[in-house]
Length: 504
Image (tube, rainbow, N blue to C red; front, side, top):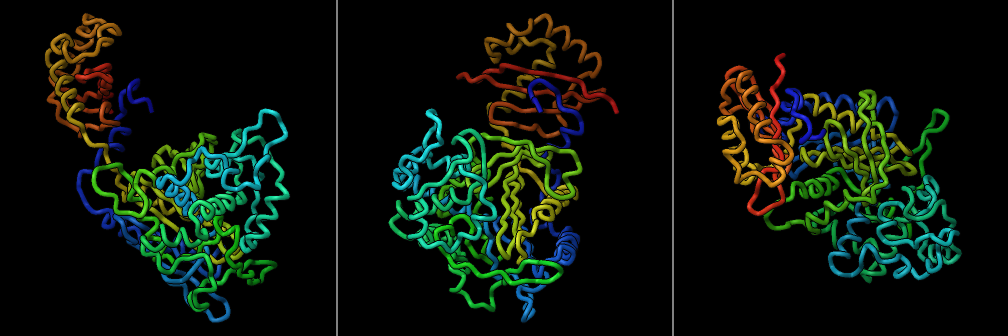
């Protein structure tokens, strides 16, 4: 929506206004838990998958978690919030944040060529003279030119380091010129894990455990599944010709950084809460193991945007999203929920998904123990169900003193019927773009139609420190407006638009 070219409609304004009654996010979400439980229970039964656990995170904690089915078919142990699942490609966000943490420590630059840390890559390039060489940031956003390698990459998890080095020395074929398009690459994230180990001076798993898992209290999470009792683990299965077959348990290896992490729901909720805590930007100490501003970089990609439908039943609404790959997370702009961060995890024996709506401060995740379970749709349906029920509340941008002063100026202009009463508050373009006489004519017409406007009504809706929308109650109706301030000191108004709200 162009806030500065179009006045807000009544429906649009009401959807953006802050909720009238304040309550905690957990209290707003709680009435929907029973219905969402039924959705996930039906999904586990009908897919089918032996077991499933899902959780909802808000206000920095796991506010709801439920398990359905069993973690193993032999002993029929029930899935619990402490059952351990492999989360496959949802591991990539941990790898990406590890790279960013090393960048923060001055150990590397995202613009460094990957071959600086992986000398076996020297000379790698697409066979054209103008092909760029691969940077670390290209690997993070899957634009290094490698071919999509699902499901081949998943089966490489236990590859020994020596074998991985041998693979690098033989070289790999390119699918396309680097930096020309997004193409998902597990191999690229294996390279990033190798860089983490090289730069940090310790094994990749040790760096992630020390830098992220341990500080967050994720004591049941790790990369070597054999270090946990079998009684705690969700055994992975695939479904073939009406029968279950146990998948082999893959040990940690060179491809672990792309998908080998094992977690419990109770542990993973701490990760989701940590990610959500990075929004909104604010004052105050950084309590996490990595800075909030750094966590927000996971949502920044290289702008290879594609138009994609939503997952699940909500795809039928016709809302097409702009989606790009950030750093270990996919980033979508939704027509209703704004920015959404998400990622799936498909793996031999497991299927998972995570979905965050940072501006609402809510996250949902789901783990299953069936190969490549398509769990995205059920997670998205649950999130949009919460929104439809009015359980999601979105943080409003605070009203800055500059914008508040400009609103007072707008009220004075309307009351006087003349913009020149505020000449000193207008930017140099204001009366060049539209004459004072034209303003007087339109203001007179508005006052005839609406009468006096008190300036009271809906709370103003800032879209930034220097821009926003507002609605005023008037004697004979309502008036919508937008304000855009100029980049000057002192602050001045570069644009003011006033439009009567059509009567229903």
